[in-house]
Length: 218
View 1: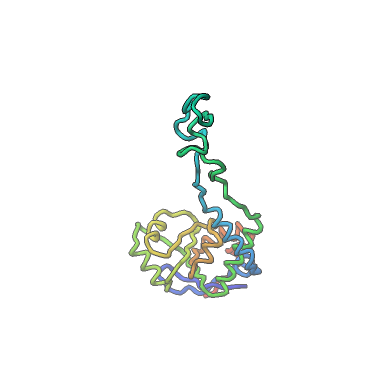
View 2: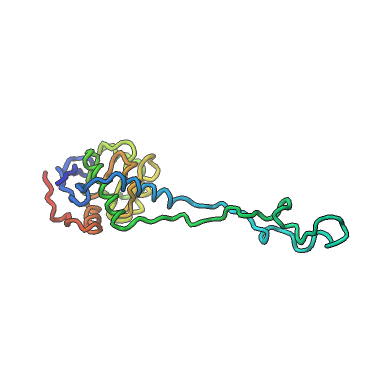
């Protein structure tokens, strides 16, 4: 079974913790990971393009000139597409660009990404993460004590606005609450820090063994 370094908040070593095979020792499927990242990027798009049809442009409430006797072609409205500032024919309009992956595929992609990071030895588990008050300085000190640099994904067991606000001003730091993180969050991260309580949430979500039954070695 895969292991991860277990540390305290001050950076002191607390041994190692055994991770679930379903999450950190799963079969790696690169194609599925790529599909999940593309799917998330697609869902983040907002199609705001829009053009007005002849019924939406201003004006055009009456005929521009009389039907006969002018020598010109008959016209019914100046909002017709062939007029300047008239309606647009077959122009772009907002579309629903959302795409979905099957539930099992999403979970398999997350497990694949976590397995890759675990095999690279960049997954660190800390026993707890607590803040008395919002402080970016304290948050940066914790990362320095843990030896964490670069893009980092921090996974919490529950929402904590104090922790979130303490880390949000540090470049490259992404804070997520388990299990609400994506494959792209994992793939983009150079380091992953998981609070031990988050392992319980992940194990329950993915049907893995209870982390309380996993042995921690010191």
